[in-house]
Length: 314
Image 1: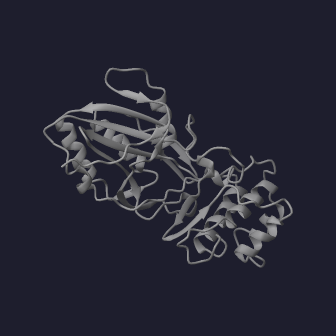
Image 2: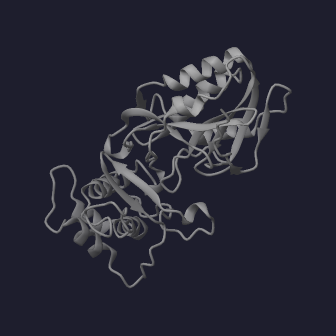
């Protein structure tokens, strides 16, 4: 076992707005959350907290002895698991005020222990967990656009770690999303799994949905003018987006790349890797856009910001 593993970023006190947010995680239909600082002091016995939360006092499986891992793992790894399990749970979680007792959180924690033991990850924060907002009525969002007129398309990228091709950071995989603007009509949306995916637990595929991304934060973006024919194709593709979301083969970045390429941007696949898989992702795509040369065919923005609000003028 690597006793000198990197300090898990799950619980480092970062002085950034993004690190102070709560990240909502999902495994199947059970939702749980984690924060990066819950005020645990060094006097707390982290090993015992994990045992108490998971009820693992007598757990000794054929393939992996969780109790042995808890007793012998590096301090930082143990504290990361304890911090996660003691984080406040989602307000709609029926299992109690913290992740302790939540079957989805327990599954995640135990899978993380095995991945840490086998050096598949350096920290819990390396795992790209994707959770969705509510689905949007994409037909309603796009109904005001005139298919006989030009428009502007923007591909926005929220990177897990701004300025880095990292595929996941602080359990955040980032997000790629798009906007269409035509006069005063604006639609901002992205592609998500319907219920959530988590490669650590093997849940990488789900039904795909389009969700409203108005006001979503981003780190880089690229915009271009499109013809009426391109607008027609983009709207048709968005309304009939692929039915199946797969973290490895078709995710939010694949959707954004496809919209960008219908627009003539010739964006690459932007491949990267993560535990149990890999594929297009916001970290790599963001760096590609960040490093593009100036061009008359598109405009790039490498200053972080917030996407516009939706507007329908019809």
